[in-house]
Image (cartoon, rainbow over the protein chains, first blue to last red):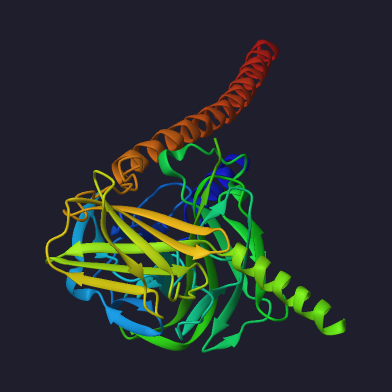
Length: 251
Length: 171
């Protein structure tokens, strides 16, 4: 009986880990010498580095700069990784100031949870040293507005953000945190270490100290007020407000 | 006296504030046009700041003051390699070097996709773990069965002995 329980637990463990939409640039700060920034968009489990999930063509890919929005849908290219659809694009930065990149993926149906998932994901890249714009809400349906400048961070820095849904703070929002575990160098002592969880306070504000060097994904999960139909049945939508930030270690 | 103190305090404040922001230069030489844009990290332009553009030999190519938006542009041919120096005052000085072939450098970190366990690998791992577990399960069941076997065998022996006993008694 015990053995069977172990088996069941093992199987469910594969579903327990968190899905994350990834929007990862080659750098979080463009310089005059390095201003062609390559972005990778994948839908995966960042800590375990897989399994990867199919990411169909996103609904929108935009960049916000100085309050202006520009669509980048024309420059995205499909790239097959591990047999799954992912998307890349290159952005040439021309102007100083913070550039906020946002991907709005299409809905993903998760049979294990009987829900549709949509992770609206944001990554801020600084342009040529002018540190202006990162703290402004973009006006997304679900959004994490950083209270920590989201670039030029050291390993061990705290990241603080505010969770907004339709422009209003979400008190007590649950935020899942995962490290993009390149090369699976970090081993999780227990399964609960894979996805870190913090809750927002009454004003929708959360904090997390990032212990490793690399990219960190923050996903505030919100039950959306829409339902979607599939095969004649209605399913709820899990809306995610995501942000990715990078930490640097010192030698 | 009071106003003096206030002025000193104000200048001290603005002084420290200016120091917190790094002076930056963004400069390009494209289509025979040299453009320079200089600003502090908080977005304030380096307005009316003096600047110098030096060629590879250190000779002054052009110098002067940026406009109030911290910008300058010049049409015409430019040296291949240039060093731009902007003096923002108060110890703020920035330098930027450019080559006429802007952006030959496409360096970026490719996020590793190869390190990801692919589905076939994952399937393999799951299969191995499962087979280990099922093997143990099977062993457990086998163990269970051997107990039953022994009991049945035991009952068989008992019945057999009784049978023999009965046979012996009848005789």
